Image (tube, rainbow, N blue to C red):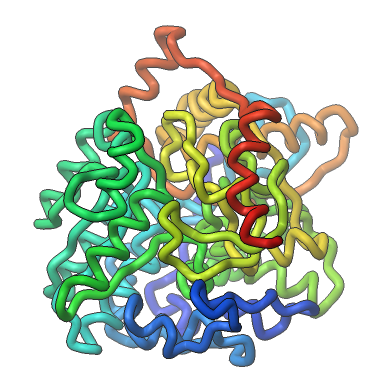
Length: 454
């Protein structure tokens, strides 16, 4: 067996996060205040987020942001994570490509989400906050924040998208193990949830809906702040520990990636693996390709528009300049719940617009087929979200097989699928179906964003 892991010692955990905003040729368009439509200032975010995260969100000048030692100490429980050469997957595909994956599934929460959860919980604790709220799609972020909140002694309330709440009961159990309060969204506990259920009592929810409920709870509860697991700039910043480690590990392997791939919901794990390598494209002229893999049922990068839109369904968030399919979007109940989000992060949207990255959309059955092949060759059952990155990697590796080119491909294994086995059951039984957003549906949802830009 040729399986080889490139693992760095604990001392190599990065001491600073990389802020790509500082080096972008075109800075992202300003985030706008939802009331005044004027560019947002950090203090405008203080009622919702803790102050340090608000400051990081709008920092376009500092290339490196120091990681607090208390956060690095928590990282040391699972970082540095392994970089693995996928020899057996290469052999199964018959490809000359060299395939590497960064294994973020080894964290206590089972995914990359803990990288930002620990940072946000620490900053909240440092500020004297006693309660934090959030939303979660498939449950990875909710599980990670629940763990982080317990580590720093903060109470945590999670609104979980109702479709995932019912599909993934063991994700709920993980959050309960860490003493979090979980509510299926939409719910009758907030004004936003009541309004949605009044229109459709059987609404299965969306990340946009759960965000609305979590923010409403945060701003109406004393000494409580909202936290987010993807999309926003400070979240993507914290995830860059992934790519910074991978850089050093690729050096140990004696290679440099021609292609970097990650699944894409709001952009947290994509930014984490991509930004550190992308800086070399921007500053040194390297030609690495960066591919975001999203579901065909939620194609914000491949079929959405670049315009201002709300980050939530109720319109409580600032207006974000991003690729979006509309904040009223109601996603199909695919198993990759973490990818069912209507918009892309502000930084990634600008990078996409400027041609620094590209995107593909994939059907659900193709991604699970790829995930099963990965499990049978590499021994890890991937999360449904991560299956998208694996499927995109297989596509690129097979292109190398056709052309005979030997390219180096790096993808991020964002999490394991050990509590997603009901999805695999559906795949193996032949009951899994694909869902592609129609042009008519896309136009209907897009209208909600278009109206904000007139």
